[in-house]
Length: 350
Image (cartoon, one colour):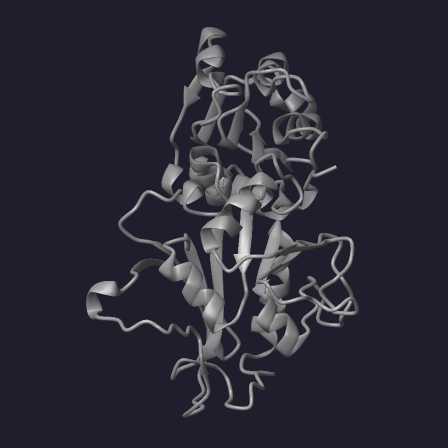
């Protein structure tokens, strides 16, 4: 079950506070629900107290709404459901969430993002037909630009949402001249990387990185134990990957190409929605030059190397007109390090 008793409240909540709880519930199940979206739902009783909080279960399991209703029990009667995505209105692997909400007797439904899937859409109209008050697009931008962004991107484009992860010094180096890079960033930043890996469907590196660094690319605790959710590990490139390479295993794929567009098409055919590119400078540049990066997570350590391998590396000459601009949406302090999260500017990528 993806029910979260620790998020229920003892005091009445505003609609905005309830949506913040729903976002937290959705974030907690991120990485476990694909190809379904990671949705969070909060049920408020008639006094505005959160009596049920849940997220989507893994595919084939229940959606967030029926789980939150189960927690709320009879206190859902006359209450409010706050959901990050418009409740579905179709029979798939599970019954429609709209019918569950109506049967529980909620009087009001608030959702952030309208369902772009034409098969599941139409929930708001059905609920209104049942004389349930519906408030849509509530804090939409916050949810659509956040953890739900990759799934919305997939619905619109049928292409994986690409997040480029970089880590480097203040002077822009990812490793020293002898290729050593452990550890540029500190423990908190490294722990954050592993949590993020567990939330992604796949992690991508180039075969050059595999040969040079022999990474595991697993999501681990600070003690080195593997987390319960692990991403697919992908190597891109034409070089062979050794049979005893750390990256190998059941959860490994080798995409034998240097063409980013071919790699994207292959990942799309695999149904990959949320992909993290962790490769070296050349792979990072290749994705940027192919206009394939939708978001960036850049870890910056307050340190200088003076010389070394840059965060990105291209063989092409550039001018300022070639710059790829992103807009900062979050800045997080992790010990002495900083994580900047940025989304692509100038295009509707979400």
